[in-house]
Image (cartoon, rainbow over all chains, first blue to last red; front, side):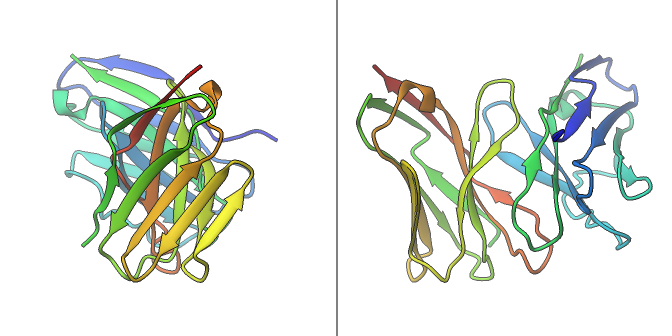
Amino acid sequence: GAGVSQSPSNKVTEKGKDVELRCDPISGHTALYWYRQSLGQGLEFLIYFQGNSAPDKSGLPSDRFSAERTGGSVSTLTIQRTQQEDSAVYLCASSLERASGEQYFGPGTRLTVT
Amino acid sequence: QQQVKQSPQSLIVQKGGISIINCAYENTAFDYFPWYQQFPGKGPALLIAIRPDVSEKKEGRFTISFNKSAKQFSLHIMDSQPGDSATYFCAASESYNTDKLIFGTGTRLQVFP
């Protein structure tokens, strides 16, 4: 079946502009996660959605970052007033249910802020 | 408390050799320890995972060894192949809490023929 898909695959934006990154999780997966991978770094947790529960936003680095998940499926990560330090690969993952452990990652969106 | 420390940063192994990557953690509430493999331009892919109720798990050429008392776990790749050349990340989570994975900083493995 189809895996996690993300769009766009690459995004170049000017400093100060807003960007939206999209994630389509695997069908039927109730949990969705966003991570950020900076060049040469590990992955940094950003936000986690589980069903209708309030999201865990504890990893969002500033109030310029927000995310929503509509209808329990597609998620959008929004970065307002982008800064050069926001340049990274943004990865989305989904899992069948919480506590299952297995998270399946999409290919990521490479964001470059000039 | 939330960190997962991974070593080495890079590893060069000859084809047929054993690759060993180590991770250590502090948070005793972690109860799920996966390893991910990432090729350039791709998202990480789950390779193998372990929970603290066992000390070792083997899947093909890949083995996780887990030492609960030392709060350490490692990935062993037996008979390493050039196709194994990738970046490997260990991670940990409190799967019965938030599920968010805390990742190590990665190990770039190069296997030469």
